[in-house]
Length: 357
Image 1 (cartoon, rainbow, N blue to C red):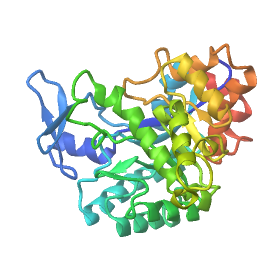
Image 2 (cartoon, rainbow, N blue to C red):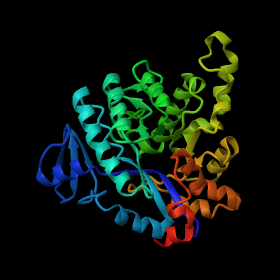
Image 3 (cartoon, rainbow, N blue to C red):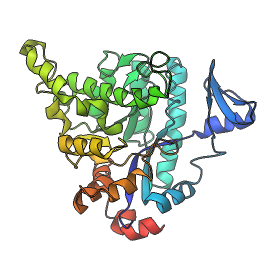
């Protein structure tokens, strides 16, 4: 395990939520509960989510990474809020206040451990003006250059006229964008996908695909070919259904096309990245075949239970269909390029020391 890894898909518990839970206070509509079995939970309205939250999370960056380095050689994390806390239910003012609080915590983490963490800032995408103002604050005041958004916001895809201008502004600001499905608002949630955890098994990769294809079909990448974006779950089912997307592009007339080239031609462009959290070697082989190894990154969903069995980083280290150079690209080099990391200092100058601590 001498080659370190960068994890582009991890989550954290905001200190404000944890402190409010301990004090019995509401936090942007969330309230802490103790269920009959003694397990802690958080509730938003009538929705109750049972988790095992830590007492604190990002207060000790070294402690958070220590076990991950030992288990998977993960020496660096890009961290985003837990997927149920995008909080698009808030109005514009409270949504902006929530994001500023969250982004301040991430900026402090990044400043304290710049060779271990990148904070993925958040925007109140439920309101365009609030999102644009929060983007400006995060970049200019907090020095954050990396963001996370969801494939849909209160039922609106990323090509929606209320959301696309925010992506245009992000591209103009030169920031990077991770796209991660929200816990709520996924396709089919509460309906036909409500049983057997289909809301995650089906809907999460479908949402990743909707985000990816909405961006491509919006023409955003034609206008901003340098915009760097990273999509979860290997880009979802879109990678496996390219023939249908390309077929429709060729079927319609040029006047109806919203982007310059067939969808498949955008996937392997150097500015689109995908994590390898696909849980299946044949699926990973197809992703590699269709987008190459230069855009793939490690993703684990830490600390939640959707990591690849044995760990995604270890899976890539053991992937015998990849050569050593490809494995190193996926483990850390591609993510270092995505997040503009200085690879001459920190763990990347001496991989062995990064893994040993």
